[in-house]
Image 1: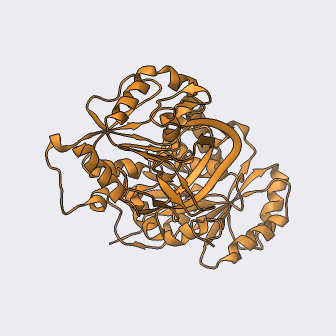
Image 2: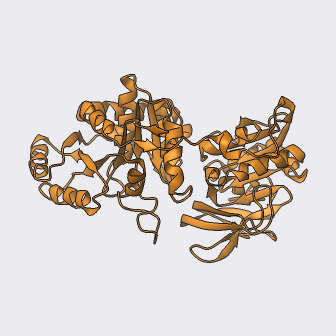
Image 3: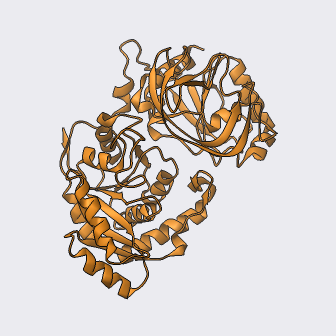
Length: 458
């Protein structure tokens, strides 16, 4: 099979150049033209895809060559872009910045090559004129396999400034496909882990996305960008399919009463999740039901398993603590031996307390905010058997938090980590698997199958 869906990768020389504004604005602007736009984000970012979803009305999906492996980037892209007229992929950091010590792996350039997609380079043009040509020339010539098909100039100060920039770039042969003036109305507020998620500021986020769309529509050559997108190379191979990924020769549930109910935490405090994880749970035979730990005082009726992903429980510690009925329900479910999978924010929620506020008390550990950012990819191996993985199972994950849990591991740790130093981390206790590590289950679909089987038999 092959696909020639038009696609663009929006990249930049460095973080802070305006990738999110341009990528989200392009998504919204093309969607306003009546196109079905597939939104994607390079790397492990959870927040930008929320803004992408607002812009397009479709699920924002991540493309991470480290977490999932380069071989899954194309299939996962085709899964998300199925039936779409255009795909826009927002890059991560600078164009050539990838996993530390791993060369180009997981960089925007790497993903662009895997997708055979042209790159649009967003350049912060403030405080420079003719030098912009040298900058663009360097990025264009660094890797001949990366095709930079156009430049969008951001933060241009005036008409005169624009003329100077355009004249300089004529020497590079790279067309200018957009010029954006400074526009504070499209700024989105940030916090200790990046942008504030859409779920926490929906009305304001809708306004911000509309402003991005207007700015991009006014300042960019949408027809030229669409023409560039159509020049993308043909992608061979089949789209990723959750049902095929979890297919097991030993069990294929067919009756509705064979579908154990799995509650998945959501709402404002738990916004970090990969869509494919939930799709894998459903494909493995689970009845997936969302709930909001800030507002729901009970778990969904008939819950047999619980998944609590990442987010910002530290921002909502008092409100989560105040929902004592749900905290008790979670503790009761965990004590019954039911499968519980918790990542990062979920780990904090299961602790005794978070910044002095009582949490669920499932784990004999305390959590607190710190001023130190823990960030990076991790190679992990399951230390022992759990509801997620058999001992020895290898996965790649990502840590991203400013909290600390003490102790950092239980008597039965969840993972042994090779980077940045060898250590054990997380907790396995009865049916509970709790860890700081964010994982993308498409890389190990057996995780979802194992979890649902344990829900079915517990």
